[in-house]
Image (tube, rainbow, N blue to C red; front, top):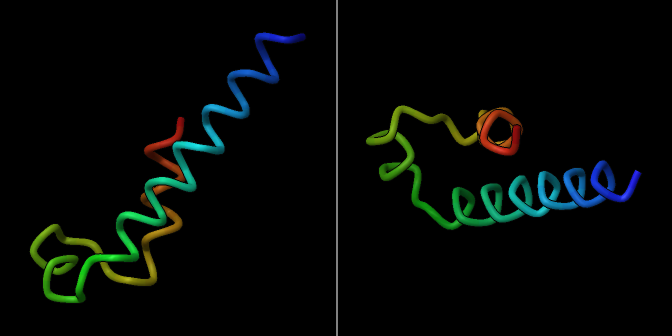
Length: 49
């Protein structure tokens, strides 16, 4: 059970960090990466798995 909670917490932190970092980028920088601003949460969810 503890392993499951620890894994969920790590995944949540990874999601939060990814959203935060991508949100700091300009629209042009996101375009260079091929990411639309509206897709940040989707990209972060995929990164946290």
